[in-house]
Structure formats: C-alpha cells, structure tokens
Image (tube, rainbow, N blue to C red; front, side, top):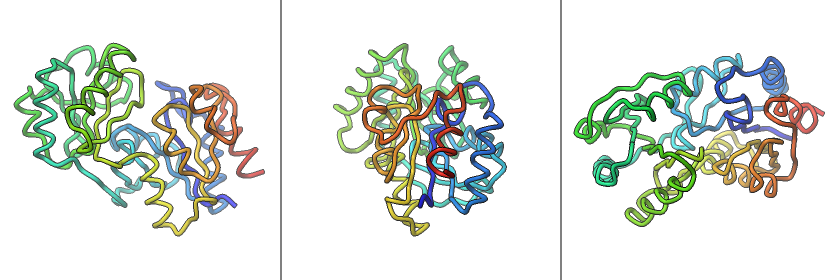
Length: 265
C-alpha cells in the first residue's frame, strides 16, 4: 500500500508556464482523502513552489531547493540545510571570476548581481521578482541560503560549469542540473532523494510504501529512493530506463493517469 506519494512539478505535475490541470488537482485530492501523504519535490525556491502547492487545495509538505528545505503549505519547517556562509562567499567569488551569471536565495528571497536576460527569464518562469544587489551584495546575502544557481546558454556550457564547480569545491558541495541551463549548488548529500528519506522517516513510512514520479535527470535519485518509480511519457531516456513504470505525457495529464492506474486502482 502506498502511504507517501512524491511528485516533481515541472514536466510532471504541470506543463512549465501553465497552471495545474483540474484532473491533476483532483488526483492529488483523491490521494489525500485516501489517507496518502502527497508531497511535491522541486528545485524551485519555496516561494515559487508554494502557489503550485496551494492550488492543490491541501496542506502538503513541499520539498524545495532540490531537497534542502522541506516546509508545509502553512509554513512549518520540517527540515532545512543551508550552505555555510563562508563557503557561499567562496562560490560567489569563483563565479564572479568565471564571469558567470549567479543567483542566490537568502531567506527565500531571490538575489542576483545585475538584472539581465537570465534573471528576467527566470523571474517570468517562476513567477517571482528578484533583487539586483551587485557582486558585493551577493557576498553579503549569506543567511539561510539553501541553494546557489548559475544559468548558462545551454547544456554543453552547463556540463562545463558543473565540472568546474566540482573540481574547485570537491565534496564541500553537491552540484546538480534540474534544467539544461541550470547549474545548482547545494549542501553535500542533499537531494530530492535525501529529503524523501527524511520525510518518510518522520512519517514512519517504509521505502516499499513510497511512490515517486518525475521526468528529469535531477529526479533520478528521488525515483530510486522510492519503492515504486514512475516516469512521465515526456521524461528523458535516463529516467524512463530507470523507472518501474511509465505513464502518459505531462500535456495529456499523465500524472492523473498514473494516480488512477497505480495508486487508487
């Protein structure tokens, strides 16, 4: 029996840039009414994930910042892991030397050195507004930072940045990619998977009672941490090849299809 159901947001629960469909909302509410804890797990900041969770109409826990912060819709922090302040300064300095765009999330507020096309596209996609503070300002915004994010022009450049950050900082950080253009820097051993394990432990749920659904590479650890894993029809091949089950595409409410077929059956 499934007791904890974990879902990615973009490309899974909703089509990026669009609202959650009525079918997917109904599927979540059916699970909650059946006594299943539903959580959404995302690389998004809490502030950007919250409106999505609120539309579900239930007080679900939200796994945000790729696992660094678990917080309920009504604001209760279940778990948080913040980057050390001195390390943040080192990373900011490193990214400034590389001439990379970088943004920070101190206290769940978005900051970047200068407003540009990267920041503007990000703000539109996440429906949040950030603050231009300069590189010196970014070095000062070190309190309660769950994640730092560099945005590049494409997948090849992102791969180079991930390699460069790993080479420079080693096991001081975890580096992941939730989007072809995103280099995400979080605390070591933090992932959606670690957050799922922490939440399951707090709920007294066994791995066999956890089901997860996703579409992107950064969902893989989370999917592997679940007893049963579902790949979206639009998922990357690496996800499809690793999952137990495959459902329909995000645009065709594959999420709701999976819930009806594999959870509520």
